[in-house]
Image (cartoon, rainbow, N blue to C red; front, side, top):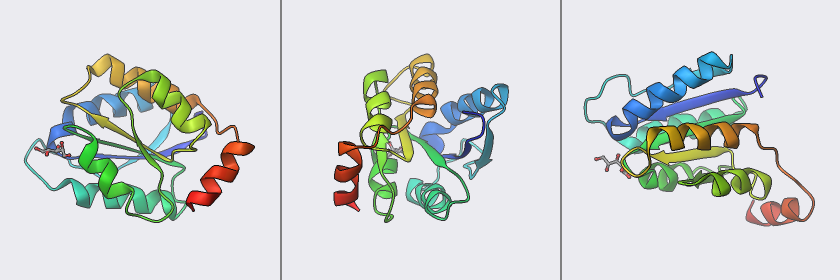
Amino acid sequence: MNHLKVAIGSDHGGFRYKESIIDYLKIRDIEYIDVGTYTPESCDYPEIARKVAELVTSGKVDRGILVCGTGIGMSIAANKVHGIRAALCSDTYSARVSRAHNNANILCLGERVIGEHLALDITDIWLKTGFEGGRHKRRVDIIE
Ligand code: RB5
């Protein structure tokens, strides 16, 4: 998984978890681009979601991670970008299946919803799981 390149971003509501996930990426030698926010000051999550989404669709990174208070705003905004399949996950099963079945290319997390260690476990599983293809590819192709 450390051949993956990841873009990561958050608003103020997800800032603390973004920093923890970056520590996780560093420990595992996973290359990343941090699009911000860089301080806990209030900011607008759609701007951050667009930056990460465009890095993914341009192919500059393989996958994206977005954190806000609930993960909902980030997922709504990211999914407006054509080619993005952003999955808001609050459990490890959904994280695994969002990759295996939906080929999710952005993971969204809610800092005010789940604990930090669960967020890190979800991230770990999501980054490690591959797309199964087959019948799932047909369905993803229908979305596109
Ligand atoms: C910010 O207060 C909050 O609205 C944001 O982080 C996110 O939860 C939006 O969906």
